[in-house]
Length: 363
Picture (cartoon, rainbow, N blue to C red):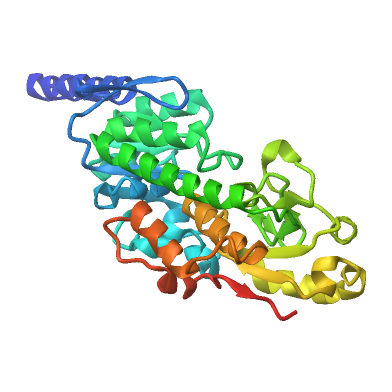
């Protein structure tokens, strides 16, 4: 072999080997300037200026948007891009109403290492719960990965919610914004608590129409519905499925004794069809016989719409005890949207253009 050809071949082999080492080791000194402990207990070194973020899996984009960092997102997965899932349901995630995700690159999933790298991201946020998968993602992209938690039973008043914000706040250099949001939602919870303490009404309520693990309908319910707790409403269903939504049956709904029924806008049309098919069975339910059926904003879609927990609580309070929960529901909803999405012009009316919003159901 010619000596020049041999030299070129050797250089190519060395370079290829070097690239392979970088690819598997996470790159040469891309560690960053800030140490963050994520939701999986991993210690991650992130760049001081994490201004290009890829968001993967449920809840990640939502949390980044809460921190006012939407403009830093350079890559999202198939769900947030709208490449998969029902187009009709896309805006059931409130943050997708607040912001335009069409400009953002679709990287598909956590497995598309090259696609993620091509965005130029210097931080990845994911809600993957398998530590090995998260470590593999970081190893194969050479980009720091921060894990958050988007479990369906984490509510806006939980330490887990606050922890998510503080983890990302530190990773993005937005600690003050994280604390601002935590303080703001705590003030809202305190206000709801003051209303609750003034009310002696504790009606038994049913919540249906929810959507969880790609299933939903009138019989998708939960015994762990935070908006009921915030306003002192009783839940007619038992807590099951580790606090997450679950499928019940029409018979169980009918025997639950619910005095009011609330139906999540997520599956409103399908829930109405189920209701009409089972009207005779459900007619003995006080909520049905008294015509006390209401729609609410979407609680869960690709994770929890945490802001909806607070908005729904204000609406439900106004229904169960109007003299005590005396306020303009739309104004309260706009206050919450302003808190969670301060750099967006989304408001209650805009949101209702995609989700049915609050209304009395004439079923």
